[in-house]
Image (cartoon, rainbow, N blue to C red; front, side, top):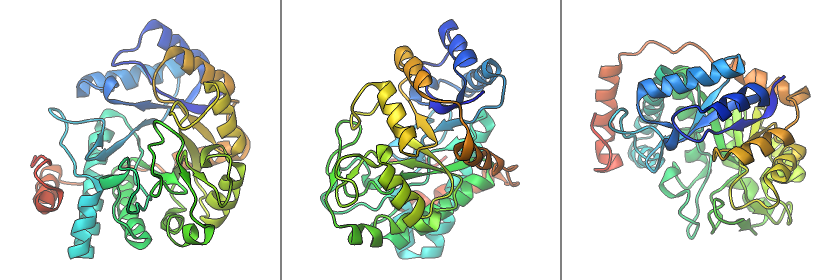
Length: 343
């Protein structure tokens, strides 16, 4: 049996309590954060032991975007540019911007694949607007749906070429909120017609990607009460129907401040609304147990979508990593700014 949730872990080593949890609670997947990362050998060992505990090759996820959101970094892994750097290069030369986005993602995939990480919570389909909270900010590829979706598709291609599954986020859009959903519940009051033509439009060309993540955002013109993560109306009418997303849909982290109720209630609400998988990230043991208890066995259409997502994994394409890294960081040095390593 596999349950419909993804769990985090407390630190870089598995303790006895976590080993027993993984054996008994049957998560679909595991997500890693900086607190879980010390060195390549340590990460490989952590993943190997977690997979041994569950008795299968469970998916291992990470948020490895580049810029502000990068769980693996120096001294063992390069610093990658934020998404906006690809957008700047795209503005000067679209083909070059797409090629850089694709190559950067291919290099990230190589880093992850070497460790046994096979899912990256990337690309973003969010289209930020003036006045929005900076939580998205330079993580976004641009401010038009067409540009964002083009670069996001290139990033997804690069990840999959490197044997890593992409997770498109944050469906149906996190570009307009004036609040950070990590802390509080954002509310967007824009008319649906505008949202359909802008925010939602960026995700339509990405609708066939294998995995997606919801936004903890209320869209009052569609559902004035519930955020997308726990709104059956938004998941059905917008994410599945209007956008046409066909992949396995996971919630954003159910421990974030945007959601209310107990952790178990949040998990139940997300799954009841139409999420296929509930994501829980903080590694707090009591919360992990509550999420596992609230998550039913993965079954039916949700199981079929999750199985199809994993079936999309493929062997990495051949690449001369040294030459590719040199090419990539040379191309991006001006667009990304001085914060990016040249290695």
